[in-house]
Image (cartoon, rainbow, N blue to C red; front, side):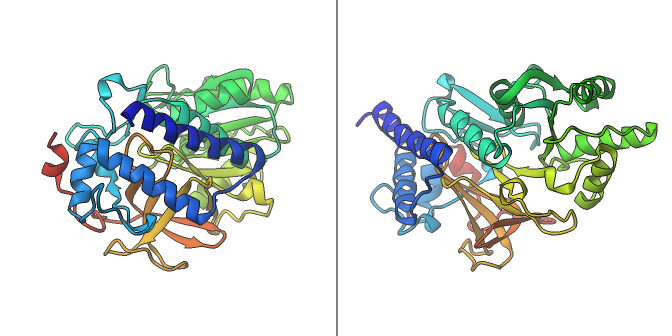
Length: 371
């Protein structure tokens, strides 16, 4: 088969999986997940040269595949800053997203030859975990505006959601590192007057500044019933860090909301799919101080690994590896420096390892950079 034919066949299978889960809640059997993960991995070995060279250091090739999806070598997130990790000629990319951090002035890029998988995955996950009640919300976005940062995956995500799930009125309140507070106040006041439930999507950094500004001016805005908040993390590289419990408590006080309407989303530029807190779908009280369980769509699975890169038993703290089948045109397995614990109910995220170094086998930059 040609590259185009192979890619089309894989995309058709993946889009079918996403659609069946989105519409009917159909999950993926373990054996089917494994077969598809290994098929995508073999495809990436054929067409993603830098990734194939990296995997050859583990002894894997198109003739020698891993025995299980747990053994697929995970590419470190930092590698996206060192090499072009794609199965196609990126001059013909349908889109790409850039990481927010820099290494010696270089941003990592996640290239996609089509946005079909990204669009389908993000809407399916958002609908299931943020909109289980199918509420039509007004979106007030304290995230990068795609008009200003067209290659922000978070901005792209919220632009798609706002356009397809919103009430026709959308606000953007971040310009560079500045919070457009007066514009936000005007729009949240208008939504309250209209009795319109809102979704405030914000990085933790922007949310902290929003709460600070409201405290300084002693402002409170009681949100309409059905409102919710999507908090996306985002303190990495910032000089100020606020504990999540403190941030959520301040927000709830200023907006008259309960903590169980705040959903923390966990995603990254190097992935196509996202995790979300389970608070809206499980409908149980959420303690801001307690650990929250994160859920994922069935084509995204996490491995918690030790220093040797081997999967650890449930209930054990380790570094996170994500296997995202929707990463068809890049790398199916991604190694992070985030810590977590896997339970039967889902994933508990513990944050970034202090002074973290790459886990498992070390990254060979020269191998990745060779074309």
